[in-house]
Image 1 (cartoon, rainbow, N blue to C red):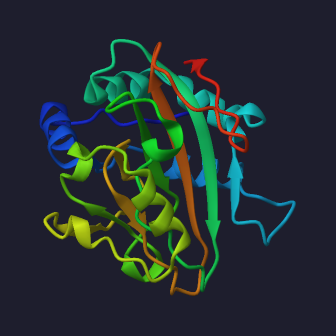
Image 2 (image 1 turned 90 degrees about the vertical axis):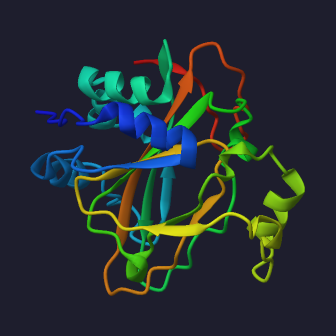
Length: 226
């Protein structure tokens, strides 16, 4: 049974999302449910694989989570979507010594337009800097898509986003049950996993009904009704 907790102070969370470009939602998920979901979405075929995309297409439990009315209604309220669709799902399996993900904007890949898409980042364990917490350039969601900077950041290990020094860089700790809703324009990344255990995460991608988007050769995104 899917157990989603009702969000308290949801109006404040909405304000924080549009102000900072992201918001941490504490205690959104029932921990027992998350442990079950982790078990049934764990990659058993290839222990060396670190990512799977669009798992909702072949995983009934992820599809059911997308369509859960409590979660759907709360996320659409924060995003200010009158009609919300699913767009993509990703499962990350970051083993020890895995490097983090460089700073980027999600809409560099999706191309849906400002505030027309967002990702819900759901960790399956407590996340701290040691095992790869997310970091954000707070309030950088007002930036336009800068393809050149995204490409340099993603492909050059020594590249530094000096242009964005005016934004405060902030790392976000999460406990199991928490989730982070990420604006498609905010600049963010993740730290490396320096712990002795895998850092496992599920990401649900949402899009406003009728918005344009880039399907992607690998991701093959396609909006679906939830």
